[in-house]
Image (cartoon, rainbow, N blue to C red; front, side):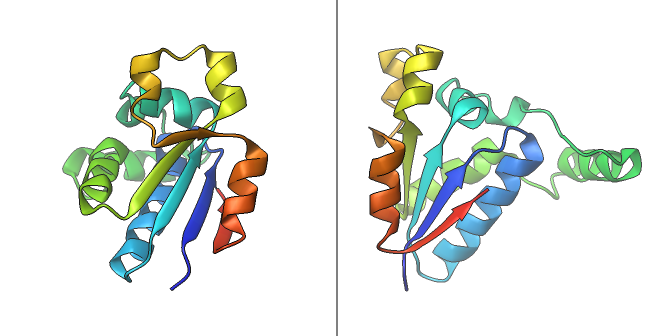
Length: 134
């Protein structure tokens, strides 16, 4: 099975949750996943605040139903999901070098990443698998 390369540009709880659901499904099928975090998702990951990202859905009824599912535990929080995926050992997490530099992330925060990469490097790596921009 080819590795899955996910370029994460989403900045909401539901964006990140959906991305991690894709990652979990791929890992569940025996694959490996490479997450490339940028801007808001990178900042939230490095500050351990993924679960605090806003739910971003335009339809009020859908947003309310989604929030209720999160509150009930039917939809797991992104931080919990990512922790479980990391424990399985089939996911690598990279930070965008431009985002890391612009956000002025501290060394301790950067240490949570497996590597800091340029877009070019991540794109070259993804040539060995399947790339999705989410």
